[in-house]
Image 1 (tube, rainbow, N blue to C red):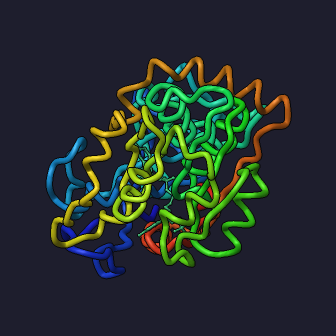
Image 2: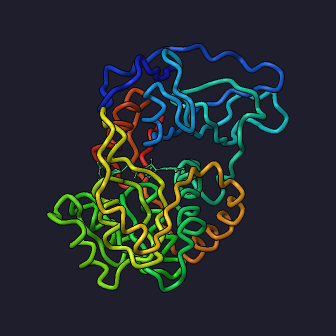
Length: 329
Ligand code: NDP
């Protein structure tokens, strides 16, 4: 079976030579173990932090070993009573075609309603991230206006649809005309192409003339500055990610309009989705109801082949994906 290793810790942009395609044996399952053939693996922006060799909220990847990460696959052989061949499982066993692992380390998924890869996207941690940010951190109310940044991405496209389903007005930012059309097609009330905007603050004010109550931060930098400028008094920011900064080799300078935090009594809170696992049940209930009502369209970009996983990952930073970026094995 083939798998991807990280060869060195990164400074600046990720490059193909930082990764290696390697061969590994997949042993027959021992007592309590199963062998799984992966169908899809997830590549996510947070993995960039794990490639830096420093500890953030998760430790770094180990060099010369398979990279960990979300993956869904099919059980092909089982010595574990909770799983049988043909079952689908979600794991964190990462960027590889197949593996053998203890059955209890795997989460069985129900593929009768949703396809397996949805558990890496809208029905998985990606969807939960959008849900936590909107519902708990921003505490978005019906009739309020939210700005979703990176609106055509995985978390962004999920969050736009959730916020609409909750009765809010949603404006979104995305890069380029095609992505803006997509963002509109999933329900955003207004969209700004941030790549075409000379002045992001002015463009957001045009899109949301009455101001914004909540800002869902996925980008950082100039987007954050524009959010501080355009939020209403008592506005809330869910700081989910700041992808504009992940490849910076030097620490970034800070925005100079921070006094708005005081003057407008803004509330800003960062969060890590795994600290909010208590919201999973409520999320599944709401998502199921919204899906049954036809309010949700999952969106994915699929790149084929484990050998192309580094390329898919690097594509997150140039915006190659619309919806969740996945690698099909
Ligand atoms: P996305 O699917 O949104 O992919 C990344 C997107 O970000 C790209 O498609 C691109 O869209 C945009 N982007 C990339 N570079 C820049 C840039 N320099 N400036 C502006 N936009 C840029 O990824 P995810 O949905 O998985 O993640 C979105 C954010 O959420 C990330 O910041 C991530 O780190 C964070 N996250 C946080 C979690 C948490 O627990 N806090 C959990 C999961 C994700 P475009 O073409 O429009 O530029």
